[in-house]
Length: 410
Image (cartoon, rainbow, N blue to C red; front, side):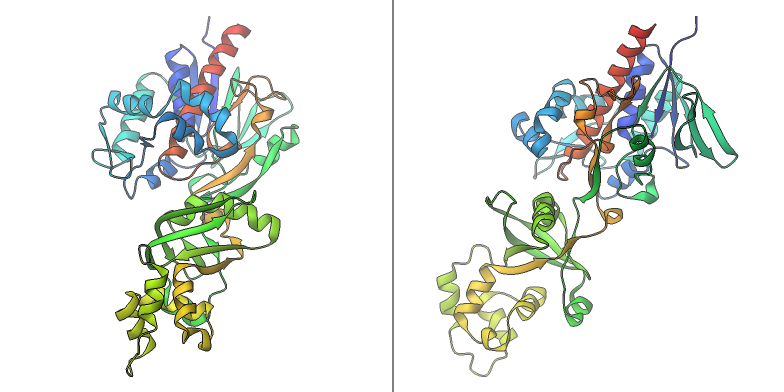
């Protein structure tokens, strides 16, 4: 009697983890990948040092998933950050905790981990089919794939979809799966950019002179859509279009929601954290003795370059000459955010298959035997290892669900 066959569509961490779980349970596994090789976004994530997970305590870790915290917590109870580190160790990759609490492989690289993982999966019998772009199902329920040699159809006893969200489409996560699933009645939240930058109407002079300039350290102040005020210190970058970087990405979900509601959002930056406003005002009120404003700001406030240029973006000439206004603005410089940057530029995406459309094993209620995992599900998280961890954990949950369903159907 032949083994039941599981088709996995998508060769990122979620799909590969589902493949690992299923093949170890004796299921025949075929992985179909739209690009010429698997794990391309995973490799890009490792270019600056693969941030695999985070060392936050479990309760704090789970809170990063916002309104989906309860659901994602269930996946993480099966496979949390410690389990992911243990899994990497079993792959021959040791990890360490950085000063920020983020967890990295010792060599900070993604390629050795991915290569070893794929090699072991192949040794265990997993079959890989690259340049197979999923097109949905035919009338007989076979999976349809577009390939360089024309359309290919494949039958499977169960299917796990792990095709990513809508960010980085050149790496395969283009959201093309939305239409075929929606046509089958699957409830899908619109894909939106997450961990993204935002547009600001800079003057041409500022955009030309200061695009790419780092803003550090700064403290961001913002109010979320529920009216709660927040503050967070970090670093960001002025771009030609607006503002981006790790600090902005951490606030992106709140800012995106306010823009959707109000048409714009205001982000306030403290450009001189640690400097008291009253003392700053007194220092800036000192006589300039013929010095330029830029030199005065540098001497009395330690502000120059892009930070000084930001003052010119938001203040008119009389205000620039008022020490009290200058001091207040340095402590709360308002930036009007017009819109998130396009989803293709975002690190990740929000939206996707609503979790309510899935049962606890991540099987689609409308399509028995079809499971979903990874970023194509409707959850989001900031950078810092939270994205990858939930992708691994959801892949494990979907893989186990597929195995259990196949056993029950046998």
